[in-house]
Length: 159
Image (cartoon, rainbow, N blue to C red; front, side):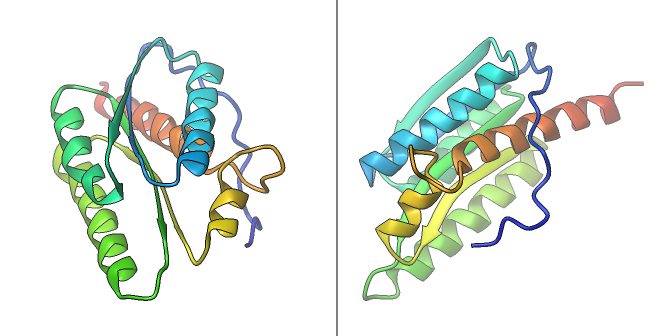
């Protein structure tokens, strides 16, 4: 795991943004950490209007993220965990989720924070979940990225 080059993630002034968080259900402990991290980022950036939506698994994230983007949210944060198993299922799910979320962001012109962990084992996922003792907080990072991008898009679109 490399943290080299990671920028400072200072709180933003995002009080007027509407933000949706869509989170998968698999790996409850990891997901609880990712959701808490995203909520910390939203709180630190003064987001007043947010919505949390749960889906069964990571594969279902894109379709719900798309529906949320179409409902006028300024940003969507997608959180999930895919842990490698003994079959190619991991590769198919990771590719579908990644491609789907990227497509939604581009088609809707709404930033989608990518907080989907793709790990070889549960230990790696726990180390990225923002829990006590974790080395990283990917939920926070994904929410911060979505907020920062939404604010940048607002500046570009404003005359």
